[in-house]
Amino acid sequence: MLVTGLPLFAAESLRLYANPAFRLKLVLLGLAGCNALLFHRTAYRSVDMWNQRFTPVGARMFASVSILLWSAAVVAGRLIAVFRVH
Image 1 (tube, rainbow, N blue to C red):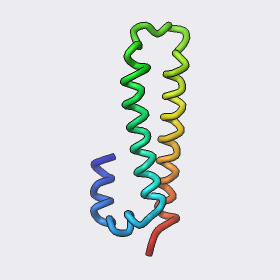
Image 2 (cartoon, helix red, strand yellow):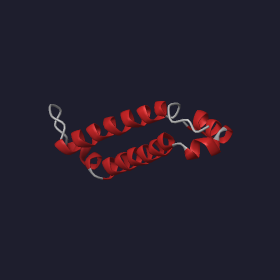
Image 3 (cartoon, one colour):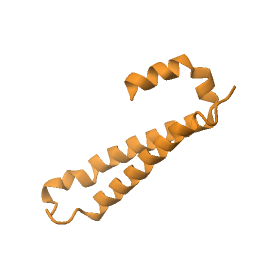
Image 4 (cartoon, rainbow, N blue to C red):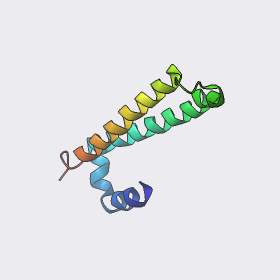
């Protein structure tokens, strides 16, 4: 992500910054990072005590939110071309 995203941003930074889809993608990526941090600070601390058959509800919630945020970030990334500022 950093290897390809930073050069792309550097090449078109003024146009991308004005693009609402790009800003939404940045917000979604930040939220996904916060979700991962919260998961590791809460639910993952007790991973050794998890039952082999059932994953705790908290961990499932973090996983669901993660899938939602990353999917939305992918969609927002695709929408950058649609909302291209000329």
